[in-house]
Image 1 (cartoon, rainbow, N blue to C red):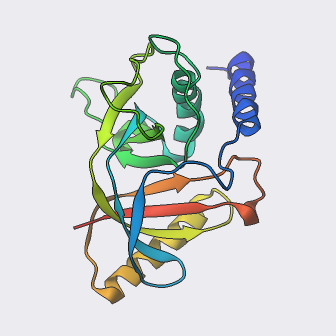
Image 2: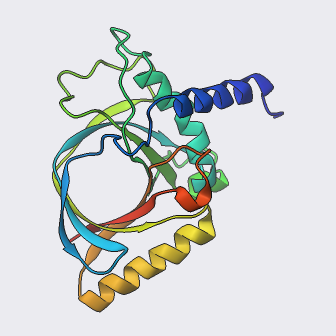
Length: 210
C-alpha cells in the first residue's frame, strides 16, 4: 500500500499544532509524584499518585507506535469527544509494549507476533474517569492508573533504540547494584516536542517496583 500523502500532511500539522502549544515547557503539568530515593544523578525511585490517561493499543512496532498513536490521541484532547471538550497537554507521553490478543485464525504480522504497543496521554489533574468526556474514536480508551512506585532513569539525546537500550541497561544495572527489584515491561516517557534539540530533551525509562 502506498503512503497516503494527505495523512502524512495531517500528522505533520498536528505535530506543528502541538509544538505551538505550551507543551513540555518548564511549567508543563506532570502527574503528582514524590522522589522516595535517589540512587545517583540519573536514577530515582518515585511514588506516583493516581491519574487518568487516554490511551490507544496498537498493533505496531516501537518505532511506528508514536507516529500512529499521536493523531488518534491528539484528536481526543483537541475536542474529538462527546461535548467537544478540549484539554491542555501534559507530560509525559508514555509508550510500553503490550501483548496483543489475537484469534489463532487471524493472520500474524511481524508486529503482532512481537506484541503491540500501548501509548498514553496523561489527562490534566482533576480529571476523573467520571468527568472525562467519552471519546468518539473507539480506539481511544480512558483508564485510571492507580497509585504506583517506579524506578526512573532520566537522560537526554535522540529518540532512538540504541539510546533507549543503553539507558535501560544502565537503569537495570543501577537497580541490581542497589538490590531493588522490578517487574513488567519498561515504559518510555517523552517530555519534549520532536523539534526540541536532542541535547535539551528530557527522556526517561520507567520500571515498576515490586
